[in-house]
Length: 250
Image (cartoon, rainbow, N blue to C red; front, side, top):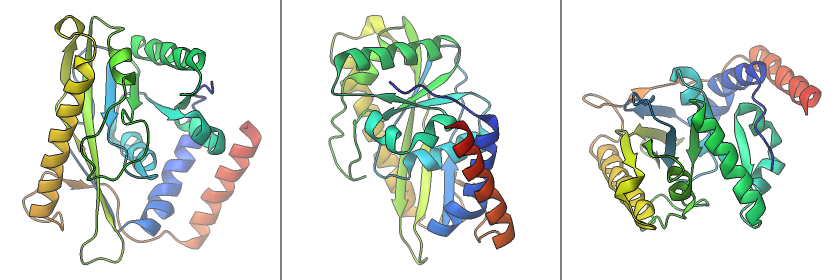
């Protein structure tokens, strides 16, 4: 497997690169709502729907700017092998085709959660349209959570929409934390329970967007980024720094 190799310097550069150029170039705006950090003192798993290549990029931006916790994300090994810089942001791999590698990845995730680090998973196991139902969770989240007597799950939903602007608007909703007691679930029940919770949140999220598509007025969503590109000189400086750091630490 590919282990995470977090780099504070690379994360700083990448955050500013996204804030000043990458996200404003591709999105009109990015909104978030809800409490980002869990308050419960249990091993913490964040679960999110996976409907776009941008999901991990946008989640990183929100967490890097607003979270006080240390976050890691499980990523398919083929994708992480192609985008290896993600490991500097906290990504580690899982090879779903090899049982021994799956076990290794989940042991690593368990170790992270036992040391007060938050782990992220996309339980669908791939990228699917944001309106697809059911979500058809795989059993990975259930397997990981049953390693702990008690744990906390934070459901997170991502939604992409177009309105009167040329570029899409992205929004992220952090749901209420769910305390999981493994003694309350038989085999297979926890995965179905978690899927039901995230489906409900996705419906709530979608309705919130429909009711206020411009995210103006009375809405719990807050804007994370200012629109507009950075100056070319500033962008070039950040891009050169990222390229140099990535090459040096690969």
